[in-house]
Length: 78
Image 1 (cartoon, rainbow, N blue to C red):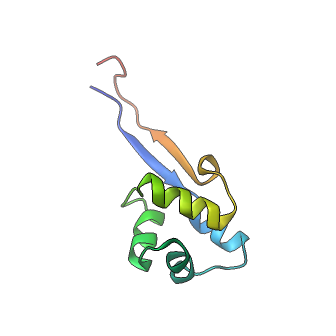
Image 2: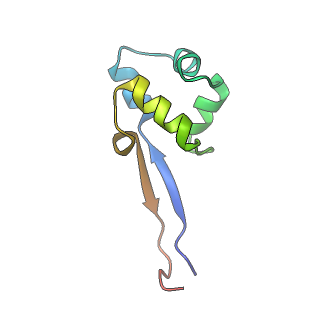
């Protein structure tokens, strides 16, 4: 069985770091809806590469700072 990967993110932390930016403000700056930002922050939706890059740029962070692969246990050989 192949390992399952989830993507963890630190968007909320970085929104606070840049001056308590709201989800709505971030959404407007990156061309998304507030609901999309909520879903990403909760780990229910993985953003496209383009959206992830726009979020990183607005928050002054790298993709690697904002997003991290979280590998669940499993048989990595098959």
